[in-house]
Each structure stands twice: as C-alpha cells, then as structure tokens.
Figure 1 (tube, helix red, strand yellow):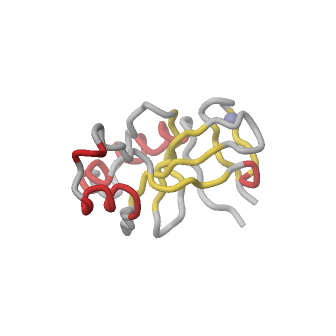
Figure 2: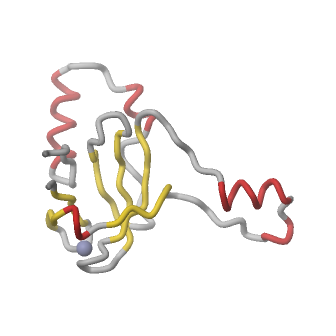
Length: 123
Ligand SMILES: [Zn+2]
C-alpha cells in the first residue's frame, strides 16, 4: 500500500482510490479531417514508453473523480510530482538530465518538490 497525493483534494490518499489513464499531454488534432491516416493513427494508438521520466494522466476514481497528471519515473516507479490538468510539470526528462548529481542544491530541490506530492513506493 502506498499513497498518492491528489492535487484537488490536497491530501495523500490510498493508491486503491486511483486509476491510471495513460500518457498525459496528448493534444487532439484541431482538424482531424485534415490529418493523414498515419497522423490520426499516431494520435489514437501510439504512446511513448520512455525509460525514465514519464507524464501520466490519472483519475481519483473513488475520491473527487477528477483527472490530474503524475510525473513518474518508470524505472524506480517513484512518483515525483502530481499536478492539476492544464498545468505543466516542473520535472521533465530535460530538467532531470540537467540536474547535477548529488549536490546540495539538488537535495534542496528534491525536498521542496516533496511538499507538492512527491513520494516513493512503499511495500
Ligand atoms: Zn481527489
């Protein structure tokens, strides 16, 4: 059992209240009729599967029933942050790549993100 921070309820709730809904930040083509079959197929069926930072849409199904986004590390399963729909993540693959390893400032950054919903997997 572990807890996930819901940015709308503003509290950590049990994982069983949540369901993953796939990759976040997928923009529907503004004019689907103008898309080629390949472009429309890419939008409907193809998703990123990165090793590392991944942004996912989740729903608080047994709580407020609102959708929100999670930044998760696909290797460690660590949830780095949660944020509301329409907001942009503060942690991306680019920011993680540019983060200096094991410096005092990066430790301070990690502590500050924990207040916004960062958490690890706990068995
Ligand atoms: Zn909620």
